[in-house]
Image 1 (cartoon, helix red, strand yellow):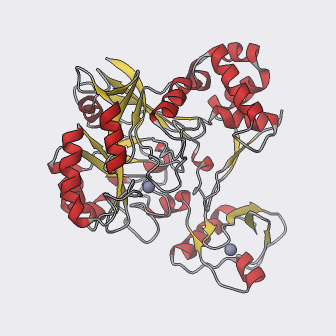
Image 2: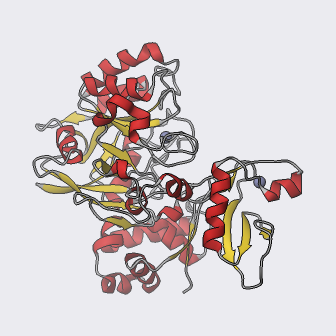
Amino acid sequence: MDLFNADLHIHSPHSIGVSKSLSLDTMFDTCKKKGLNILGTGDVLQPDWLKLLEDNLEKDKNGAYRYKDIYFILQTEIEDQESVHEVVFFEDFDMVRTIQKKLEPYSSNILGEWGGRPRVNLSPRELVDIISDEGALIGPAHAFTPFKAIFRQNKFKTLEECYAGATKKIKFIELGLSANTDLADRLECLKDVTFLSNSDAHSQGPRSLGREFNKFYIDNPSFNEILQAIERKNGRRITLNVGLNPKLGKYNVMFCNKCRRRILFKKVKKQVNTIFNQYSITDNFVIYYANDPISSRLDYIEQVSKNKMICPACKEQLNKNFKIKLGVSERIEKISTYNEPKHPNHRPPYTNAVPLVDIIRSIKNIKSSTSKTVLNQYSKIIQGLGTEFEILIDIPISKIENFDPNIALVIQALRNNEIEYTPGGGGTYGQINFQI
Ligand SMILES: [Zn+2]
Ligand SMILES: [Zn+2]
């Protein structure tokens, strides 16, 4: 048995908004730099991508698919009738083709050029039945995001509500960038499922690919071993979920559905009389002032859940009423069954990571993550010290200090959970804040 770093949900150039330079070779390069051993193929039901994978992936003696020395799990994402996104893993190409054929009558885009993430006219339950009957594995993608996710606002509150009689076939959920184990383990209905932390990358860049990943303890990198690990059978398991702090995700806090400003609460000493009447508006935020921001925020969330809260910025500036929507953190608060996380015994630890490129960028005060200075420094530190994951998680701080004391400082703070974050929301990523 061995440890493998696996990011099991990505996309191909056949999904909308995906980098055109994403290819097996560019993915391979990033995997080597980061220390990723296994990748999801993304979009495997799309005919052109499927053909490319069939032509280029080699099957080894364990039935694992390989490109050079990076392993791949055949994977796609599907949108069902309820606009819930699901991640699917397949054992082999035969299984992919069988399921492709079964889904075709229910989908207008599954064979299309842009059908990377097909939509099927099936209920979540029907889709789960079709997929699992063939031996493939399915579970909800980015389970808490405000769009296209099972637990989004005004949608399902439990797995059972969504999947009914097929609930037992759901062995995992994907946390998504804006959630972590502490947030998700506040829902009783998730106690028996395994959590996956995947990147959902739309680019091979080192900021996207592997920004979230899982450490698998398995015998070899094949579908069968991954399946056993997700089902926690025969000693196979996930030993660590690694991901962004939820505040760095794009949908952590409440936001206006129109102007996309994020909603924050701040404590003030001066007596605030009228509820939600004192606020300031900046380019990116509406900040409410309250004497007791915690309870004011809860009242506010209550109103937002009822679709009753309108954006004061849009009201003032456009004289129009647009609704505030819940972010991942508030939605979890709303549907949670526990006030504090209750981790089942099988739950592995969750470690925060920030892409190394973002750390370098923040230290050098450079906005663009594709800047030459940033990417050169990135390559240099990897050549000098080891893979990105080793640098972020394992390598002693003293070694990193010899290389660059500022980077060492941030990584130490990250490991000790001492970093401050500006929460993301409304489609904008959060940020790390620190002074050096
Ligand atoms: Zn999705
Ligand atoms: Zn607005």
